[in-house]
Image (cartoon, rainbow, N blue to C red; front, side, top):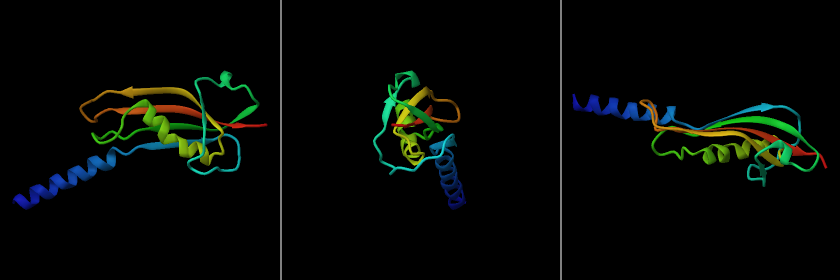
Length: 122
């Protein structure tokens, strides 16, 4: 009997771990050449701050994991999206929104961010 209970507990931990994964949604806007995942990206608070010709390469929505072990900050959500911005061929990101949700009955909280991946035209 004890063996079954521990198997169920182990399964529950696995389900919680899988349910708490981080994710990044990518909506392509304009086609461009991908860059390496660790490319350098300028970061802006507003598209108006960019002082050179540019276009939106893609729009990114990022969420951190929700388990106790994940960094659930807004900055972690932004960092999670950087590799996908590079894959869109971006030179910069504009942080449209960033927030941190607190602990609830179902999660340990979560960081979320919406970004625009920008490509310089010059």
